[in-house]
Image 1 (cartoon, rainbow, N blue to C red):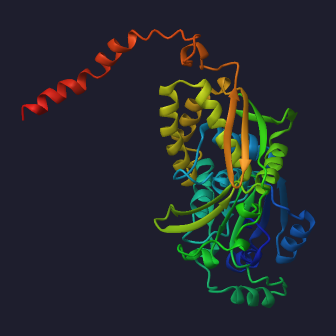
Image 2 (tube, rainbow, N blue to C red; image 1 turned 90 degrees about the vertical axis):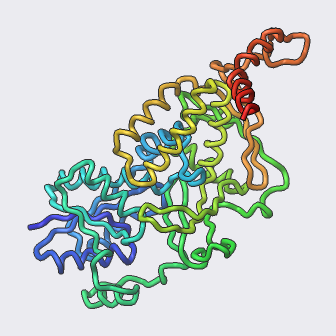
Image 3 (cartoon, rainbow, N blue to C red; image 1 turned 180 degrees about the horizontal axis):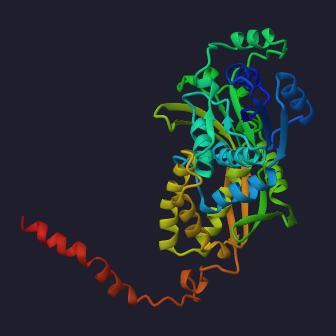
Length: 399
C-alpha cells in the first residue's frame, strides 16, 4: 500500500485531491496534514471534511509558537524583506510545513508527499525544495500540475461523482493566504496592475483615511533581537504579534502593494498586510542604528537582501541562508533595549531609542559646551580620506 502525506487546507482543491489520489494511485492510503499558523481553523470540521473525502488519517498541528520563534523572529533579526518590500509571511511558513510533511511521512513510513500548489506559483517550489533538502527519497506528487480538471465546476462535479458535497463559495474574488506574520492576496481585479486595490481585498488593515486622527505611541522592548514587551507588558512571541496586528491594523499600518518577480520567472501583482511585521521591522531598525557600527550595518543590509531572496525562493534549508543567519545573529546580544514608535495614518515612525549597548555618545555628537570632539583632527582625516580623489582629479586634468 502506497502511503501519501497531503498538505491539506480543507479547500476545494485539496478536498478534491484526496479521492483523485485514490483513483490514480490504486490502493494508496492518504494522510491529511493541516497546519495551524494563525488562521482561524476549526479542527473538527477539517478532520470531518478530510475523512469524508477519503483520508485514512488526519493530523492537525498548532505550529504558531515554532513558526514565530524559529522562522519569523530569525528573519526579523536579519531584517529580511523580498525586493525591499515583502516581509515573507507565506514564504517563511512553507519550509516549516515542509519539515512537518517529512516528519509525518517518516512517522507513518510514507513514500510520497502531495500538495495542492499550481504550476506557476511560488509555493510548489518552496514545498518541494524543503522536502528535497530534508529527505530526497520522498516522491513528490503535485496533482494540480497534471490532473484533468480545468475549472472549479469540474472539480465539484468530480466530488459529486464520488458522493462528496462541498459548498461552492466561488473561491472568493481573491486568492488569500494568511498566517500570524501576514496576509497575501492576489487574483481578481488585482491582476490588472493599474487598478487600485479594492477595499474588500484588504482583511485586517484599516484604510489610512478611516484611522484615528490622533497618533498612538508604543514602546517596544527587545532582548537579543527579539521583541518581548509592549509598553512594559511582557508577551510571548505569538501574543505580541497578535497584539500588534490589532493595534497596527487600527492605525492603517502594514499595507503593501507590489509587482514582484516570482520564482518561476513571471511577474505577479500582490498585496500584503503585515501590521505587526512592519512595526517590528521599523523598531528593530531604529535599535540597530543605535547599537551597531556602520560597517556591520551596511553589510548586514546587503546580506538581508540575499536572505530575503533565498527565503522567497524556497532555499530556507540552504547553507547560505543559515550562514547569513549566523552572521546577523553574531551581534544580536546588542539588540537589547527599547524603541518608541509612533503610529499615524498608515505610518510607523521611530521617535526614540535607548539601549545599554548604545554607541551614541552625547559628548561627541553635541554642539554645546559639552562637546569633547577634537575638531583639529578633521583636517588630517579629510586630507587622507580624500587623497585618492585628489590624485585622480590631477590625472584627469592632464587628459
